[in-house]
Length: 199
Ligand code: GTP
Ligand code: MG
Image (cartoon, rainbow, N blue to C red; front, side, top):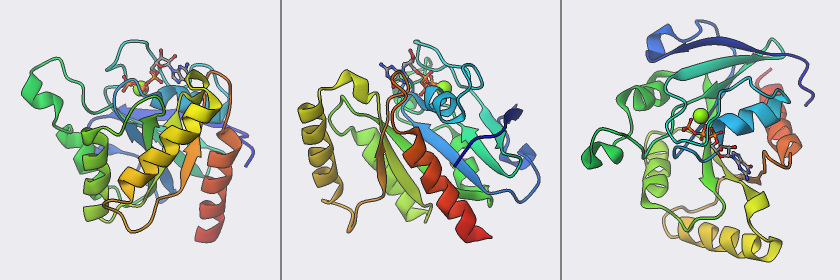
């Protein structure tokens, strides 16, 4: 899919105030600093459409972007990071769970996983929660420029093996590097095919 236009629509923390139309939407979620906002910039080929930072906790709100005038990309705050207390670090912010539970326009989530790391409990729990709530998702392994090809293959295989301990089948997954602009076409074509199937 070619991106002809990408514009910021709005930011807020209340799912009830998100854009009130029926355009299909796709949301990017994952631990703070995993690269959600950078990925949105890569996909849209815009440098600063979504705000990024080397410090975790940059994205604080639900951010809607209108793509090609007919679907939404949504940048969400990361989970697993909070300045408040150790206890709340584990908690997914309520407005994020509200967003996933209530947003009827959401077609699929993309759960971003840092390709350098071993499977993390908080990510596995979040995917479990999506499954229990019947929210479709795909996985995006990010920052693959940081891992050598053979090590990357091993990481992905072992990640998938961990998933198969609890899931009957694997979700679709993608490998990306926003720094090296790898993987955008695959993700966009996946979204494009789903959008076409909705018409
Ligand atoms: P929060 O909004 O805080 O939850 O973070 P985020 O998931 O939106 O991450 P963000 O896109 O802001 O990126 C976090 C850091 O990772 C920044 O310093 C980015 O430059 C870096 N980063 C993101 N994607 C990549 C990538 O593909 N490769 C490399 N090497 N660095 C990346
Ligand atoms: Mg962000």
